[in-house]
Image (cartoon, rainbow, N blue to C red; front, side, top):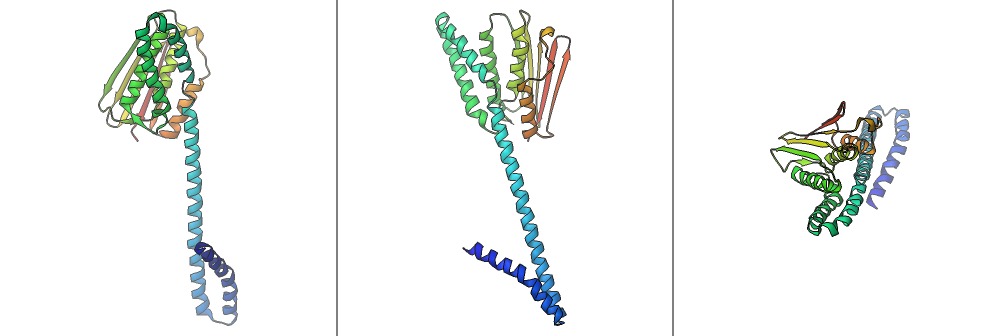
Length: 256
């Protein structure tokens, strides 16, 4: 009730004061009119500033909520088909090599847990993200009945450094999808990841079948670019380079 009473008092003051001022001016009470005018317009100024401030806070809050909603939606798009394909491969492996199937099922379980739970967090440690990438590589190797060279070189100063989850997986997934899957033999993926005090650098290179190149960027890369814009504005760099049949990507993230 109190805020409502205060609002009623304010609006009565705002509406009635101009009439009081006209009466004072008409009766030549100039000093009182001047003081009342100063008091009146000072209050209006302060109230106006508070109103503008509240409107700006509301706009910023809505914008942040929209960004968070969009970010959650983008995260939910990360490689769900990979899990289905892996399950299909595991089904056939159960009879062939049950021990290996059990190991891979545990890795898949860890990946699903990470994607569902840790993947929804704002930030995770570099150590957690690396483990997720390693599991992904192991499961992918199981899918292909051909020799694939995958080198994952790490130079990590601090494994507890924070990073947004499920960023690097998009680049690794693309390397498998557009490189390894389309090559009969000689496929390779080279990954170098460094983490220093102020930034994280992720570089990935893979060969591919030049006849299978598509000019349009995939959903995954558009997803990655948008997430970087939302979380690392002006604190990231992402570059792509193609030389004959070699595709290179470099991603650098500044610590927030």
